[in-house]
Length: 339
Image (cartoon, rainbow, N blue to C red; front, side):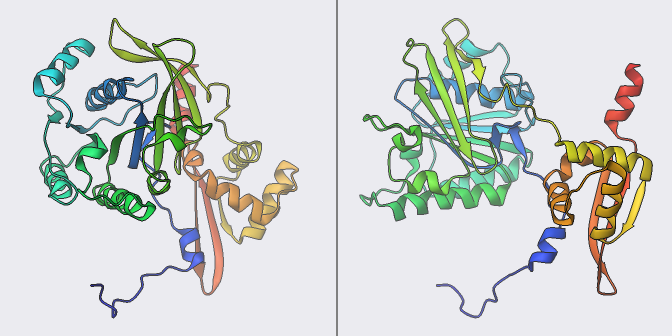
């Protein structure tokens, strides 16, 4: 029973806006973030092949479809398989499995020690970044409650574990047999499952041929995305044919490019948000509002830092101040060395 005397931990909006919080970490850049993830797919479509490939590549630090990986220890709970089957699959996809990729074919359930088992593993391997559970159904509590509340609660337990351990926890799940225009509605169970996870993936068969599928992606820390894939029967891995993000320019907005140029000359600034916006507008011949400029700076903070621009907001004698600084970035040094 919760202690009624425990004081609610709160933070005021001004302090929160000024905090420099670490960016979301990714196991696979732009695709597989830290947190609670779920992968749905029809039976025998090839979900497990992709998860196995992910585990090996992340453990090695090798790219996934040209996307950078964050190297670290991986754990794959392949609960529908035997060690012999896992070994055979590994022999199909690679000739080398690193010692920081771990596998298990049995584990407890949510009500029978699973979370503690994962905690203990991460304690023994503190560089763990990715844990996959295949399948979610096997580790669920043994009850007949199929309500939204039960689905949400079980996923919430796993999410709390992922957040506590700062890992990406991926659950492999099945799809309903009946179709739906929204691929995420095909996940077995109620909408409580999708509602509780941070990121959801659905691997759905393509109409073109049996070897093709579309990987649908949605989540709190990733952009909605569709990847057209084809399964290679020679290499036993999913190959990417097309990515819906390929034609999107992942560049800074014009206002932020102008800000970098402005600060290259200014070098440093200390004053109010209004004073900074006035200087910026005068230098760049822009008409950006004080609020709009600060919002964009907050949104693109980590990208700006890659270009050598950093800032912080704080109060001094009751007055809100903004400090902005520019120093040569790794990008600048790389450009000079290339000339």
